Image (cartoon, rainbow, N blue to C red; front, side, top):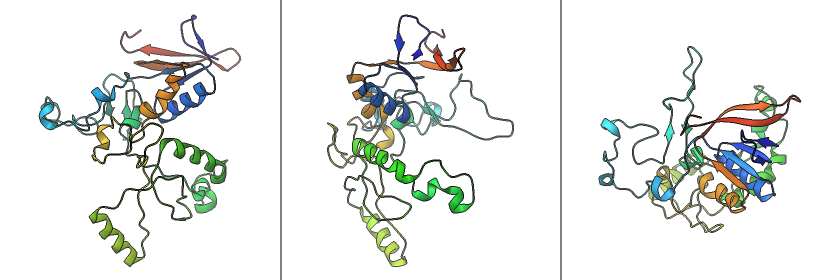
Length: 279
């Protein structure tokens, strides 16, 4: 069992983070009957308030260009919330001489609120990098072993695409892709002439209704969030059914500090900081 610092409540599982992995784990575990607590380093999400896909420049304090004309985060005031390369006050460092940066999103659903929805499967060769290219290591599992789980995820979240029988770009459980735009038909025609493979994108965006979610209405504002949940985000697709079980407790603004081990070397609890109170 995992336990919070309070002795009053013991949970079966503690999940750190509410993004793609955390949200999916919460759905599976709560629907399986476990009591789950989730620590999220940012606030809860309100799509009607936080998403900006249909906002006009005149509705924003700085007309969409940010404070002082500086665009912060991944873009500007139009973008889906809380995405930043650097977050003031958070204890992240890079090694001397290193320019490594990691994009962070501090809000329910994490980076799934504004990712590009590109939903490609790893192919058989991706699991056998050493055998194929002589670099790195082969995975301890194969594509064939993982394929049923790809099927399960795609069937639930909704991914559009087309079956093309490309060896290392495996086909999936696809919704129909959108019809190509004019420029795309020209690109496709040129690629066919040059014998270059050109296929529809494979994106986690609904083109048909699924699980009470409406299909995409093609406003082309995915990076601003999607109030209709037509594109995949953990906050709108995974966490709601987990919460509906009554077995999920989410603690917002809770920055995980330490995973505490017991005398047997196994995890006993998670220590976290309440960002609101600094306690």
